[in-house]
Image (tube, rainbow, N blue to C red; front, side, top):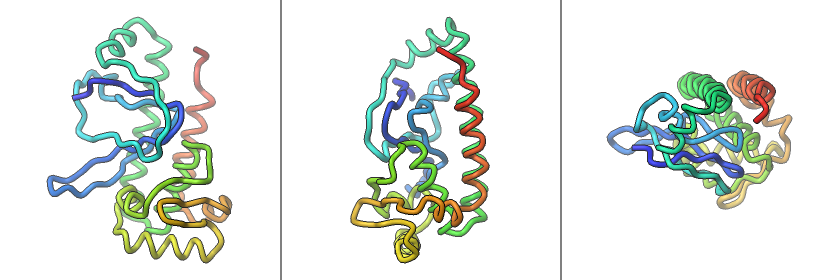
Length: 195
């Protein structure tokens, strides 16, 4: 059940789904471009997925009932949330395709780029366990790929921290999913209506 809606101003939220056995995979990320609580916009009171803070930051919070009341009276807010919902649908569908068909290196690079876009910093405070969960892979595979990316001079990895040092190189190593979602992300940002 959704009791509150969050609008991040800094940080990174992950949309995570899980199996009954507790295996988890990320479906998408949200930074200061969006919100957590989309099902309320779709007139649902609960969500089949959870939203986790992956990189701490700040957010504005609104009670769920207040959000649904404001939505009824604010057509501009409705348009913005509808556009964000479409962006998330694009991201979710591309994430499913990516997790099924692309190599761990491509998925990890896609995720690092998407995270950097959301938090606007090259230093990401994340463990390899979290990265493995986010891209639907095992920790050993993520550790191996991270070491390869570091050897290639693309990232600098330390315990609980990954720093992107060569963004162009990471973009070249990512699958096409990153660029497809990035184009939609840019279109979403450029189409925003004034408040």
